[in-house]
Length: 158
Ligand SMILES: Nc1ncnc2c1ncn2[C@@H]1O[C@H](COP(=O)(O)OP(=O)(O)OP(=O)(O)O)[C@@H](O)[C@H]1O
Ligand SMILES: [Mg+2]
Ligand SMILES: [Zn+2]
Image (cartoon, rainbow, N blue to C red; front, top):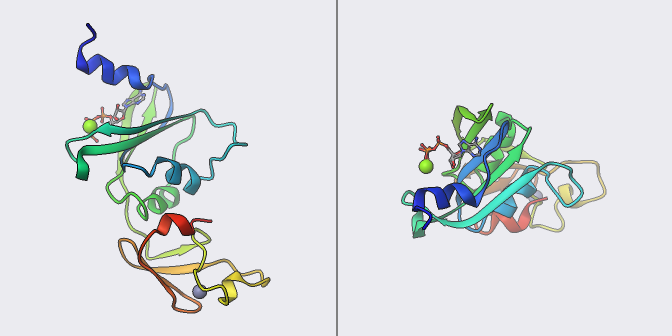
């Protein structure tokens, strides 16, 4: 019999250096990868764990993402707040957690989500990046046309 604690460890192997994004709202691991620009063509070594039990999160489930040899910087961490406001970012060096960061909701986000208004100038051929003011968790207002996104932010991710 493998004790529960060790089973937990077996889900994902330890990494020597990199970032562990923990306490991601269950179901959002792939959106976190999208926000970080990690796609099928990237060479990053990434482990994803979905729907593991968590005492801390709503519905008792969370996702975890582990990225080797990459330390997330504040601008990346804050974008994660849009879809996983309870996430914690652990920076790992030589197998140890050397830093733990909470995500902070940014005031403005540029080129992260597209405007739902198809006539918005940020959706035109003009070389303009989308820009949204973050009014609250999960509520964004387009700085060009004032359209509001207040649900399903993930579906608007660029
Ligand atoms: N070397 C490592 N390789 C991979 N994952 C790691 C490594 N060290 C820690 N982790 C993971 O990083 C997260 C944070 O580790 P920590 O030891 O701080 O756990 P914790 O005390 O449960 O923290 P928290 O209070 O944030 O939940 C956990 O999900 C843990 O499994
Ligand atoms: Mg924990
Ligand atoms: Zn707009």
